[in-house]
Length: 294
Ligand SMILES: Nc1ncnc2c1ncn2[C@@H]1O[C@H](COP(=O)(O)OP(=O)(O)O)[C@@H](O)[C@H]1O
Ligand SMILES: [Mg+2]
Image 1 (tube, rainbow, N blue to C red):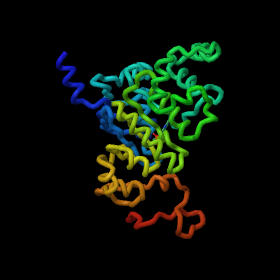
Image 2: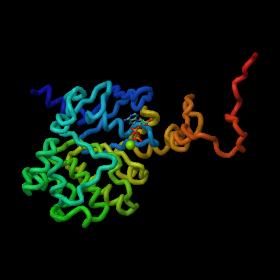
Image 3: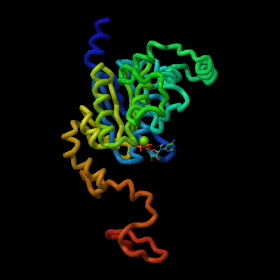
Image 4: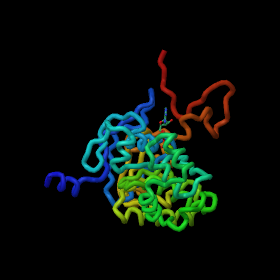
């Protein structure tokens, strides 16, 4: 239908509207509107505990969320994770480790199987690689075709990280959410990894990239969103983000931003304040204490 065609041409591949996640009393995500188009690399950054992983969990269906998740024009917030995966959206896990005893190709093959230990073991032990075509396709996409039959331990760390990405891309994924996929890479490896992401995006895949390596993120992303305490506090081009006072404040922990107090993340749970001499048994709070007239 012409309506659908028009919609896919103008709509982003993935978008969220008012996305929120609560863990008990903790608001991990609040009112998040984010959009990623095909061919685009969009960064999601923010201090530890800002809610980045929660956002990926919510979008891919691994955690209950309020709000809308739209994939390629279809509302998917009520569908299961594996349906979202089948609809073309996949993720990597923050500590996404590879199976050391499987080859690179097998590491991808097990990812395509419907989640089921029996199916997985059957395929591994019968040595079958059912979706050979799709596995090769994903490996070629990240430039790892030549090492398909090696084991992860024989690859460089950068290549291992790309296997993790390929595992998410397998089976015609069009939208991929990468949760710190370059963790542990040095500057040079990280740069190469970024170039590989650009090649992947150039094929039309939409990429949401979470990473702490600012030079990677600023270098490789078309646009960025900054999360702090579960909310988007800034968005824009890498250049705009670097200049944004709210972002600088969130990272450096300055006290006052746009009239709202931002409590530095690393101080929130600190048992004692640094610097000032401790008073035995007493908790000293900086600044003027509220006056109590009694
Ligand atoms: N499964 C969970 N149960 C309870 N709280 C959680 C859970 N996962 C994350 N949180 C909390 O939600 C907030 C966001 O965490 P997370 O999404 O992991 O942040 P990030 O990935 O940006 O470091 C943190 O306060 C964290 O402690
Ligand atoms: Mg995280």
